[in-house]
Image 1 (cartoon, one colour):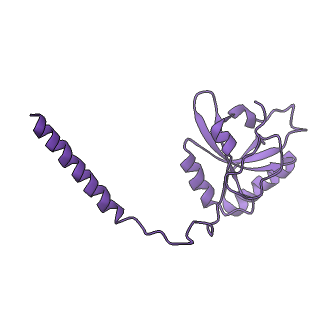
Image 2: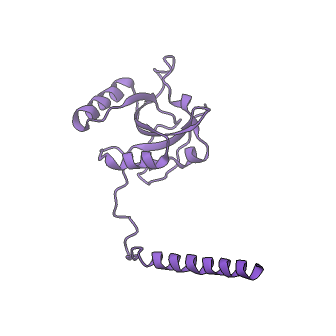
Image 3: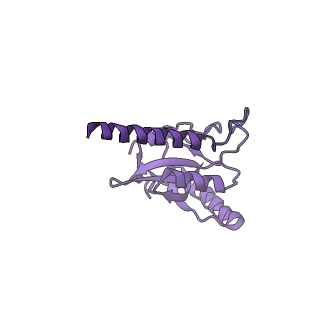
Length: 164
């Protein structure tokens, strides 16, 4: 009985090994210089927020802070990072959107946002431009970072979140 079981396990191992080897033959061959550097990334992922998500409340507009807060435009709210990345790739915008991870205490979300804008009027103007030129509907939010400077264009650059 034990020998039959060992033979079955060995046969299964051989089948899995052969299947895996066969599947690797169908993978595309690596092309030197095809590291994706020539591709334009349509988004920046905030690495800090992936490790320690911001509270969703960090993006909510507070009427008392509107004179001092920077503004952003939310292009989308997604339950999975891959969805936010896909949407970020679809937009061909002059400004690169950021993807940040937020929590509403019950679950995690990924926001695709543009900004920062120094005042609400400028954010609203940009929102109208996006609607007219690209058909993109946006939501006005508070820019969730303490520094209002954008990164140097490197994907995955970290920004410092504000305290919730």
